[in-house]
Image 1 (cartoon, rainbow, N blue to C red):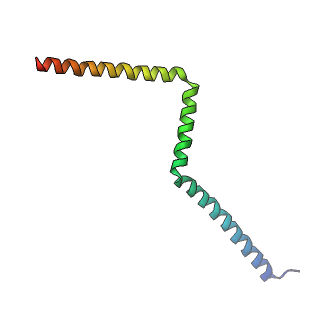
Image 2: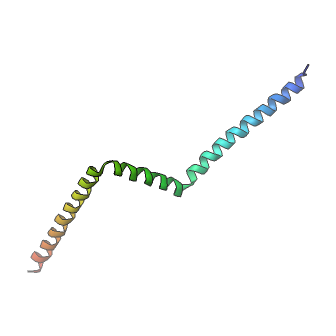
Amino acid sequence: MSTASERSADNGEQDIQAQRESLAVTINALAEKADVPTRLKSQFAATAERLRERPAMVAVVLGSALILGVVVARRKLRARSSSGA
């Protein structure tokens, strides 16, 4: 038969082990959060994969950006030529 002090010691060991496991989980979570380069690579890979799945959307966005760039450039050129005349 085990005595009350032995059961108390067993419970104490179990508590310590549970705290160690909890601390290990917390430390691992903090380490993952602090590893910015790995997180950025992962986010970049996920974004690249989404873009590969939607080539039409990429084409629309790039085309729109190109058209906007041309319009802005032409307006600047016209503004320069009209102010210099």
